[in-house]
Length: 184
Image 1 (tube, rainbow, N blue to C red):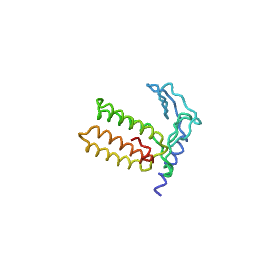
Image 2: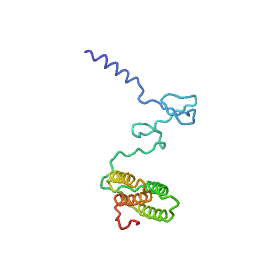
Image 3: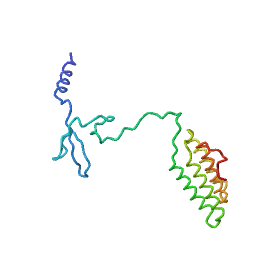
Image 4: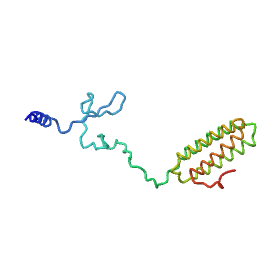
């Protein structure tokens, strides 16, 4: 049998290997903790094996591990959470754009447009959940915004008003609002 010598060699190596290696804790040059299976420096301290627990595929000292992220898929029947910071950012950018389009000279229109933006922002921030089709909705309205920008290329006040209306309609589709609650 030719496999017997290889098996004997592997068995001998397996018996001579320690069941578990020692782990040492050192401080790196930048002050961070380093864990190694060999002493990393003169100040290396062995770490007791009962101080470790398994976290994913790595061993880390108890208390220093971050919780593992869940890989479970979310239930599709659960409503998606509203990202209020994204809403604020979207309306802040809209307000800056409409300010440039309308200009400071047309104070009455700027006040009216800003009032609609503020009202629509307040309404959007009251949303409880987001449509599961949010990416399709954003895609559809991004196309409509691009079309409105082409259509109102030379009519900047008209473009500002159209963009405010489109963002309100986007909110209706995303958050299930009625068009009656939209600022006019």
